[in-house]
Amino acid sequence: MSKREDKCLTEKEYANLQKRYRNNLTRGCKELPEIPPKPKNQRGKIAKSDAHNLLERLQKYETAVLLFAKERHVPFTNNRAERDLRMAKVKQKVSGCFRKQQYAHAYCRISSYLQTMAADGVNLLVAIQIALAGQISPRVNDGGE
Image (cartoon, rainbow, N blue to C red; front, side, top):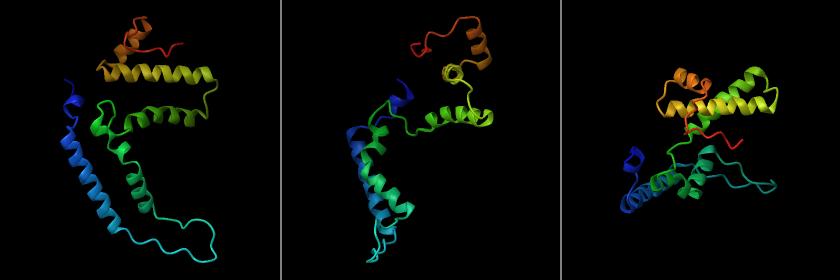
């Protein structure tokens, strides 16, 4: 059994988590300053603080926020996705751009291969040697191209 399967909550544990989550949101509501009333001759919505906006989003998307506790395939954070995109963005900023779309695709394929091999615990220099020898790991998907 993987680490992730061990960490899934039972229905009772999930209900307890949901109750604590809602209690924290209620406490947060009480801590926020009130939104001032809208002046008479002003159009549009009143600007709310970042804290108000965050609280509203946490209330509105409660099921999405707590989904990681119910579903095994949902990670706790999206840091992995952000990290995967960060290096491509840095490369793009340093170079100014990718000269051709095929270069961007090649960069993404190489980066994806190296990240997969690192996740499998393979030394990256060995992974590069394996790829150059034409012995790419069967686990790596070539994107259907």
